[in-house]
Length: 606
Ligand code: PEP
Ligand code: MG
Image (cartoon, rainbow, N blue to C red; front, side, top):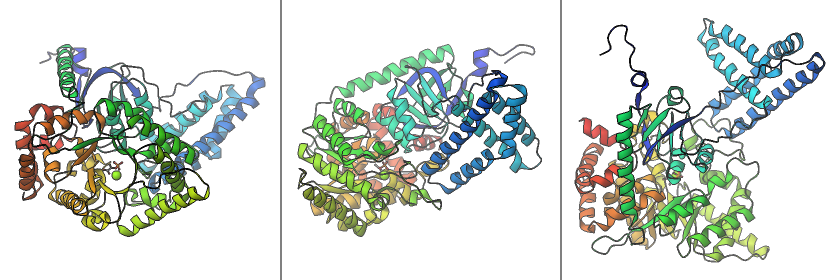
């Protein structure tokens, strides 16, 4: 209790405990590095009278370059509404009143362009903020955004460059996939973002780079300052900002315990994932970058079950060439040998945008729009170049090609025709390539899962992508944290689909793997194996924990749990059943394991 006149203890007052979604497991402690591109320092520099014209010229060029940058961003955005916002901002930039006010300030007051832009923007923002009409008040944030972009352009800075110091916890409003990869390349220890969900692509990249991450922590970037101590509990999705000293000490112990458990399971990395009765489950790695191969091998992956090639297409002006595909695949195959590598053809779209494609402005429902295989079939040259590169690389090792987001047999046939065309092109050009390359289909849409038997007759293997399968089956946007609580993998509808696909694969004698995030979650291991899935592909750091569970279990007990869960009346009952068994048998693993603790917490609140 604070007495009158007494200030609360500074540290105490500023401490914050916030919750979000645990997106990449682990515990991280470190000083915050806030990524807020909007904070741009403004130089106050006066200029000589003789330099006025040159300064105005510089300002006009800055405006033009900013227009061009916005044009580029617009081209990368598939979502109609966002594009409209950018279009409106481009119109504002063209407003002659804005530029003449800035130029007047440069000419009359002899101030540099940066200072003049900032001053004029402040004046406009002040006026707008006082408007009665909400529409005008809201425009003030557009002006702030535009002014900051013009300032950055005038300073000649690349707005996407992020360089957090080693040992830092990156705190941001949002990190699109390309930025996450940039951040992950530096030695940051943790990541916290204000938006995003469990299977948003920044979460996936954080997981594959083994950076503990909590996403969906509302306005966290506004609550934290550079250098503030931050604890990231990415097991339960909690972030503690400016912790008390005792708390910090306690969390350092938790982090050490966590890392010890990790070391213990990691010791089994050379042993097979074989259940007690001898059933072998193949555990493979999901990777997005060649840089992650080391981690996959270190954690004992028997190959790569999902290579997300779309990351090759991001942040570039021209598509990767056949030669680039060939060289990357060859390098990866050599490193992973003798194990196979499943290269998934590019899965670009709204959630993994590229500036290489001009998405239609009408794209109002991007998850159901022009993405993935649909895009590949439209951008045929880009697709054929990738297929040729992969077919050529296959002479160097066991390469497999996997097609994403296939809706059914006709679309599958269209994609297989493209594979044949790529083969013919290679024959014509007399390039060496492998004749027998297994081609598989991802099963990510309910339509494909329901007729998995038909799909199975066209391909050499199938892989269930539960991230999308759940999204489309339950109609839950996987990137929208407002509906994240409805994203429930144990929904009976999802489980029946998984069982059906496993069964179709078994009957047709082809392999079925599961490469969605569900595979990495220790709570689901028994259910998935019990439903008949014999190959799981996951982010590398999850492999040792999942392997340890499999090695400690009998196939009968896994099947028995799967049968019970299939018979559950609803998802609540299914979750209760699974949690009860798994928590009893694997308390440490569950503590350790990745994400989606939301329903566990819901369970506990009951
Ligand atoms: C999936 O949808 O489960 C999947 C593995 O593909 P991605 O997450 O890349 O869409
Ligand atoms: Mg998918």
